[in-house]
View 1 (cartoon, helix red, strand yellow):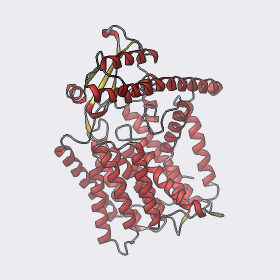
View 2: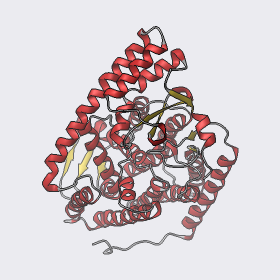
View 3: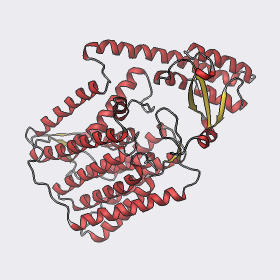
View 4: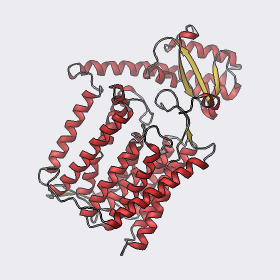
Length: 476
């Protein structure tokens, strides 16, 4: 099925555009690395963020500048360049700026989500919409009516967040973005959109140039600005390839090609819903984390996920061209892949004990709710108590009640929790550091933050400047 169609070879002009974008983005990325001072850095936390030193999060900037340069080139050199690119440019810029500002100083998940919805709503108001869903097989269609803006905005918001969610390992989101942009170029070719082909080649070239600095061990990260830009570019441009509001094969191709990120997001939603953890809270249980736990090196895990992404992209393009039973086969393959991945990656330890595993997750959720109750009390007492000594005694009691028992310092495990305003809280405890323990401790952070702001020093607690820890970290 996959090879049963003609694959067009890129023209020499298109290859030159790709190489020019690659070189420009690589040069701009090197410039960002050489000129950046003191802002937009990501510090390791010894848990989910396993890099050894602070690394720049401003990788989206050179990609965005390269995209602007490519758009200017396309407008000058491509005959009859469509005028509907200016809404795409406007809204992609808004989404990038939103993420870039968060890379400089965290804005909070709610504000970022509202900003994304706002940019998506603007694009819908400017004429890019999903009005009618036509079957990928070519038979029948459904008018969305009042649901059109909801479906359109959902598509435009979901894809950037899916890309951002998988951006947890060096080279992963940028590499996926590269393959998806190549897939988008094929969709543009078969849709007769030379502008989509060229801009997809520009974006793919920019990501290839960025990847030179983002492969493990990464010298620079995409940050939210880069991840949101990649996701919104893919979502908005694939939407623009639909004809007169119809969703034909273009979006279905991208859904199939996005198989791994969508699957990773689905797993994340399910486990966080069962455990009672906020949806946007990061953890160390994504697919790439699971592969590393299974014994894969970072490079091997990256190669496996790249390979699956390429195969799914080819499968998606094949479905676009074959029609017939192709979409049914593609959807069935995604469901089968989800079941196999859930078992192989350890999300499901055994199908026969799935109910027992679910009950265990509910037990952990109750433990987390118990810890949250102490966290709420601490947050209130941080304002009510008259001195830091009384608060520290309550904090010690709370730590004991949620399972943190002190032991000899030389044999204790250390958990580092990031506080506001550049401070870190170190907690020594007996026993193994687990993700559940870390989540319990996170429930106490609002109260500890408020107490530190009031008294600066908390007796018996080790609260130090994050910069002091980072300066002591070994060079990578």
